[in-house]
Image (cartoon, rainbow, N blue to C red; front, side):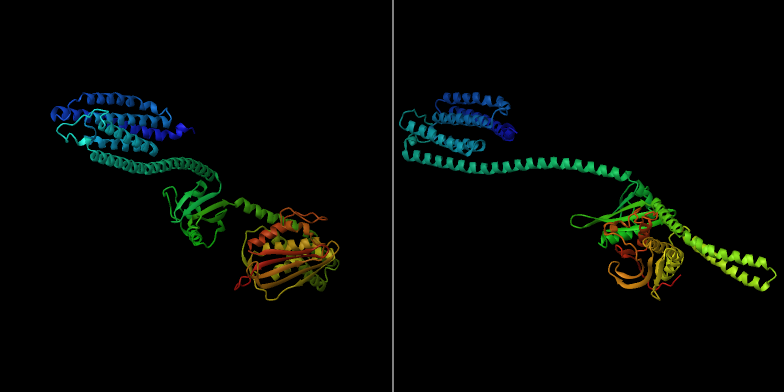
Length: 580
């Protein structure tokens, strides 16, 4: 930015004051003409008014020039405009001195009009120039008085106004000059002091104005950016498949997207089409109130509405001072995910059944052999009623054994919805141990069971928990290809530090190859398997971990290479429950 642009406000202000000075000069010229006319023609105080009229005419001539010139002043430097104004004030001082000379000199009371010019100079010009002009004014007046006093210039006496000899009185002359000079300089001091203060305030005001204009421009720019971001976020939220709902601190639903509108109807019964800002109610209101009290920062819920599964995430919105502003709800349709999880559970269950196939076949084959032998013996001697009765009993026992085995297998393989009931962990482990008995025996693995009697029941899905224990048992069998010991242990812990409550546990321990430290962090990842000699889906531990988390429990493990592994399932104890 160049100097002209920076000084432009000062230039404009100075030009306004020059125009004001021009108007004052017109008033002064008019006053001179009227005063001279009255003093000469009416009061006969001035003998020869012609010089005064000439001076008024000259003032008229140079007063015309500024009226044309100011519109070109903005193109000039600021110092040029100040010099222009100072030059006109100097002309005024000389004009007024000449007027005084032809109208009584020191006798003329209008001598004090010089002060007005110096005040004007203090307004228009700098302090330094104002004092220079005051000094010039004093020199001009002093020169006029002393030149007339020593008859170097003729004295024009005002007739019938003051004694004719007063202008010759040294005391009067000295007094007038002293009073004039002191008043003049004091007036300049006051005027310049006031103008310095005014200019400082003006500069501050101008700076504040410039700063304000900059801030307004910045705010406008920021407002545009905020509007852009708001519109962008609004568009993003509208395009989201997840429902977004915002409940403000007055419990009014003040923001929602299209998906959120449908959710409000389905979950909360809020009609957003007819009501612009419906009030939150039910679960939404309760959670919003809890979050407003700082009970939680984020809360999640999974709901089932008809055939849909919805996952709701609630979060409190707060400002930088931690004041509660509202609650935002993000709702996701997780029906497909739930179905995939169920399919994964079922797939892993069928994979486990595949691993049990040999054992199941053995459990069925032995009774079938017995049935065949009994039938053959009855055919050889059909008339032997005692033998037939005995063999029919054995045949019934074999068929019931086959029925039990097949029933267990079908019961385990059947796909079910999550059903939480009171479950006895000892029964769960016993049934799993029976299923894997042949597979373990075939590989030379001895099964040991250490159950805590009168173990408190837990609340869970018995079939899913059987699947977890079965997965852990099959992994243990796979980890002992050369045989070993598979141990099932149950018990309870009155207070578990991680879950913060009483828990019942099932521990599955093997004496197998163990899990290397380098892969222990990955064993719960989907599709990751450590089974090398046998085919594994890599879903067993991942599905098991998900099932246990659904039951609000955890799976812990400890493993050493060549020494074996121990997996512990911990589930919260539900006091007061009776076994289903």
